[in-house]
Image 1 (tube, rainbow, N blue to C red):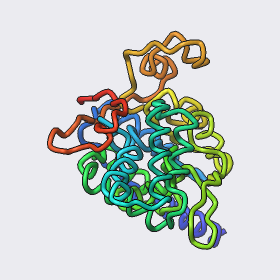
Image 2 (image 1 turned 180 degrees about the vertical axis):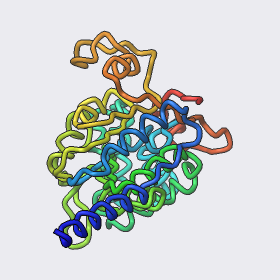
Image 3 (image 1 turned 45 degrees about the vertical axis):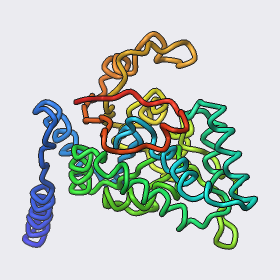
Length: 309
């Protein structure tokens, strides 16, 4: 009996230590109500004996996308700075791909997203990482949302695995996202391609984390149902619905009324739909820096709408 009592007391003591070790730090810039809701949910996960997974969209959710997506800026910047100085066939072929993308114009459509991978084919993963990293350092380093960094820090405190998904080429985002958020490069999942003998190819490995492909990416590569999912756009609906707990929507559009092609979101704006569904709506500042030159603008790609906080 004495031994049993000692065992029970020891277990209780360890549980108290675990609870005390996980302390929520309020996200500055978000309301008390928002922080209370996040803290309450995180505290409810303390005793869970499962993989605790959080999944977030990338552009517009973890860092700004105004006025252009980083993936586009990285490619058009590379074309202006590197390819236009070259006369070889490979450079000409890559510029033709960009011309096709510009003509397409739908930079969230499947052909355009796949052409980003085709454009980068033939480069090493390290070269692609540096194209994304240099673009980030030059034009986007001030656009990582401080609120989301604070949120991710809290998730780590509570023992969460954090994943970030992007429809953009995976190698393009992994280095800078990993550094900014302090998560492994293997937790940044994007459009994947086959690598042969150290060089990337145009052979795409499905699913691409775009629209319902984001939900399929969770099932295929993460292999756990997330407790928290965050997104910002119509394209994140399927992924957000994979959440077994908290849904977080950053800067949702409240202007465009979605149509029948958007399924259950039809007749709603992104914001009104997620308000109806009980998601947590948060704001992060996403405005253009007038001092930054964007190569994408000169290629006449459409701009994303600003989101002042």
